[in-house]
Length: 325
Image 1: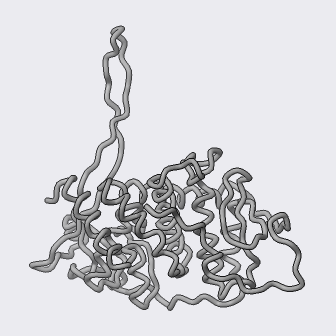
Image 2: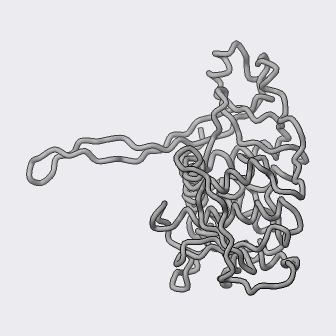
């Protein structure tokens, strides 16, 4: 079985190779032309964090359309079997355990010790004998109608994030608000929701929420790159959860060089960033259950009044470009 260090190195090298070709590994599933879902366990619980990226990558490479993955033993428990010659995909499990330690004064204390386990899983299309539902690809096509989508509007409103009208999309950590151009300034609904999802991931990092460091002027290039990577991954996870297709902008090229430099310096960065992105998405999902919806606020403090909205260039709808590494 692959060792932990080998997994860190292999996964990072794969992403670096994709970035050097100008490709974003975590966005490849949407190029397959069918609805993208989060990878699922046999009990319909989604995988999360870095496992989502690893399973998406493998499914894209092999052409798997089933969202289901399971271990060899789980397949056997369902009276099914992995086809001879099929190769597994390695995923990870992170957790902590309590260890009792004796302090210098002789008292006992409990300390949380993080640990990581590796597991091997197979896609349902590598397994014979499963119920038919495990082989069925996600139903329907991705659609992004030009009008607002009630389900997604309700999700964003449920976060109770402060959203104000502005000339470009950006999260302001000082004022703790998201600035967004009007809906009708975007090319389509997909562009609006995907851009808002990116900024909303930034919003979760505020000191009153998940307390991530932000890419302020005083922050170093590596910290900036990591925060943008978290927002990029989180927006993709959220898009898959909400049934949207994330927007691919040419401006991503501006981030690729900074991500390349950061990944080459730290082979664990993608794992940490994916974990933070998943935590951000989970935080937003939990808000849907704990807070009431409120109307999205529209303010004019960032944008002078104009007779009519004009289309906003794509480059103005994304966060500022990172400095050159």
